Image (cartoon, rainbow, N blue to C red; front, side, top):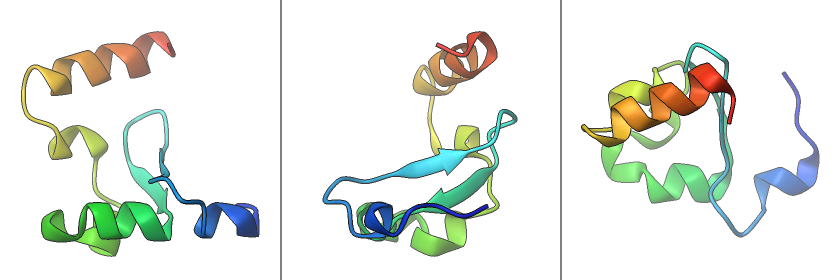
Length: 67
């Protein structure tokens, strides 16, 4: 999957996942923001595993309903 070049240097954290929650992409700011949690190594991990309850359930519901 490719993303426009401007996303890499966008001044906000951009993390993209597939419908199942697998992290596909993190821009530079996202990798820096989540460096303590693994940074770029989070690509391929499930975004739900990165969230504690109740955030995990809320995120799962948002993904399920595509809101």
